[in-house]
Image (tube, rainbow, N blue to C red; front, side):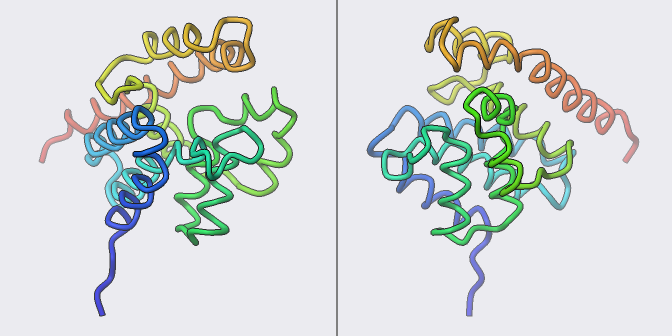
Length: 190
């Protein structure tokens, strides 16, 4: 009997949900997973967990899964209920990139937090870093440009535009914490 790794399982699932209906979202997800691989030095045993969560983080946008219109919750519910995903992957997807702030704006924060406890902060920081350092087309970017792109795409007065501006300080802080951990790892002697 062979055991499928978390990433071997996650990539085909994400592709099946995103590649055809949302090819740009699929490219973004692949780019986020690529960023996740660069964080392996600070993630250790959680590196594969992060890569799997990264490639799956936006599956809730899939037209087949969208129920509430809040993609972190829709994606996490599908991963938990239908895909029987690893609980840690599900929780990371549910809470990626300051999702609690958007959930609050949508009146879904209590629901999100009751169903999906958060993973440790360093893992949430890492996934936020990966997402906010990747363009919609999967290329590297920086979080300031990414936040500006999101606000511009949705409009500054929209729910998403307002949420992303509110989340910007935390997004920048998450990125700074990840970069500091990477720098510390690079400074340590082998």
